[in-house]
Image (tube, rainbow, N blue to C red; front, side, top):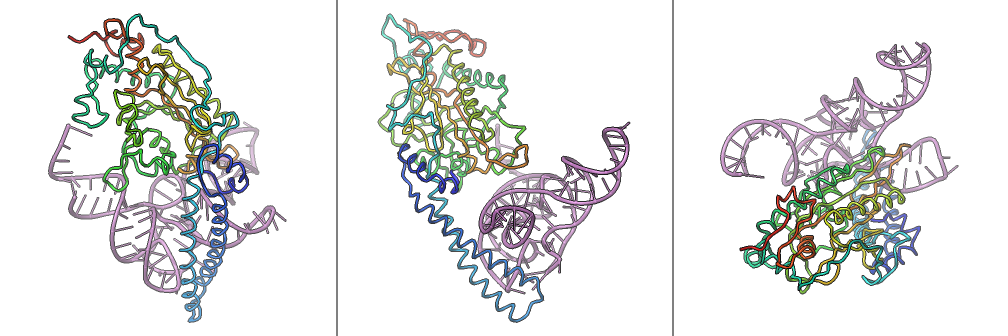
Length: 417
RNA sequence: GGAGGGGUCGCAUAGUGGACUAGUGCGUUAGUCUUGAAAACUAAUGUGGGCGCAAGCCUACCGCGAGUUCGAAUCUCGCCCCCUCCGCCA
């Protein structure tokens, strides 16, 4: 969410960003509504002032008459104001955030820039199997019974697959805790304001499961509840940045991708994720540094696991509305013969905190909206694709990365009998 | 789910239709006193919005939303949350 002041003073820039991010909004209408809003507000304040003065005096018959008149007028103007404000905030909520200067301008994924890559791609002297085939052969993934019981894109993780999944989550969790992140088990059933606040709404409504209760949704990421953790609060500068690592199940409808990735564990409705979330002060340069820190954490995890990956700097056309800078990490997935997205690392600026009303008191006593950043640490089962496929042996067994051995209790998954 | 109690400016409390422009205590900040500290004293100390060069002025907010009234923290209705007990339950 941008402030009206910002939009007024940077109209040309806002229009340019709308174009670069491929969004539409009527900027002139916003400024006109804002003008109307102020006009009504002024009128209302004058009327209220008169009413307040009146009600402090001994009341006379004329006073009562005037009071009634004021009441009627106020009602009209207050309704007017309410409607103007609703229209205004509706329109503003669609204005995306302003990317940083280093973000490349581009229309779509082709405009993203590969920053660097790590690890050697595996060379197989046999025909490698996909994670789907491996999952069957090792009896660790059961998609048939998954779809039978859960529906399209359903799955069971089984045997060492189930253990591996939990071990990976816990490995990432522990690693971030050791780096000073505050561990959170976050709710997945969330109120609508958290989804609006994090910038999921109003755009991605089709992507979210709504429960039958009036105001309850299944979050697609713990970013929603954790970003809203401090909503309506004023923090102090000294306690920032606050770094959280949150674990939660994630639910996504994957609407509009019915034909895509229909097999296997790449695109599922239900998965689990360890997320990194930072609430920081309103400082772009500090945010850049924290962004790199989040990036390093995610890359370290992949390096610990020995999985080859590449890092992309996302262009304007391929980033979300709230983001001002974003890196994606893509991990090598042999069956796709390409890298597949496994982590996404973003600076949100004050976009979310304006919607969620999260401020901090500066040392000089003034108040300012916080900045937020977030990055995946590890999401499973998608990461299992890379793990199983990259570490498969000729006989179909799979090596387990060393860092996980104490958690899993095994160092390889043998072919099932 | 049922019964009862509660929600007031960081915390604790007062306030049951007009000076509430929300009192008091604690906390916090600044000052006075002190070699320093403590104590004491004095003052300041919520959030959003508008007007103004500024000092400042105005306005809204007492869990949330409607309503009654010339006037609502206070009365009415609906909702939310918390506490206690009962029921159910991992």
